[in-house]
View 1 (tube, helix red, strand yellow):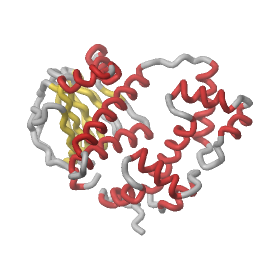
View 2 (cartoon, helix red, strand yellow):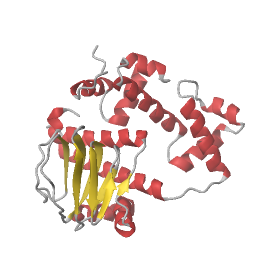
View 3 (tube, rainbow, N blue to C red):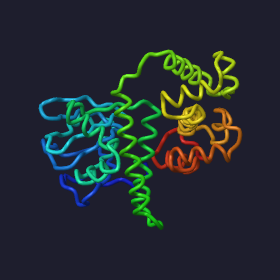
Length: 297
């Protein structure tokens, strides 16, 4: 994360805004945090650190990529076990009034809040792709908040709503069992094959021949099971590999060539759409973060 997006930690437990607030914290020392509660929803997205969270009388071990949702009026606190690694996280506060406003648009905006309060389940895990997607959404909001561009407030509102809907979708997909029918089995087989052959030709025609089904059936199976076209899914997977490769020191040119993008313009558009920043800006961000392998050419 760019250092200018960081906020110095402060113990305030009330909102200054009537709708939402977002902070990025990176701490190597903090005073002991007592149990506390507040009248808004608090999302914590954990990036790094050795901590536990106490919610009520329960202790929860926290892993990188975990998302914790604390409902209003529920006591909680973070317990720092070690500062060997910095304690890095996004903290996102959203008022009950703003949640009710979104609920008027669609009940889909409130799934994760209702699930958390009824099931007493406060932690949602992310896989690697989900982790990078959620992180990029938080980053984009912070970039807008720190900028002074035309349409800033409108863009922030759009990004906030997109973030909330994405968190709801993530929670819903984790907690809604899928039927193990033949189409879902085919989807799983396709997903596994794609995962193992991202550097190769993955056209619909090739996959149809490989799995002895029509390409239209493949397209239908993917859309029904994941809500994305197979092209979108493959692109997201390839972008994730490119992102990791760039973070690890590979040049941008080598990354997009190696992982299935035919030309830079298509790679650039896809990367910017997925992560909200250009490949070069992402590489520079890794340098700002002090990544030991960041490519500096």
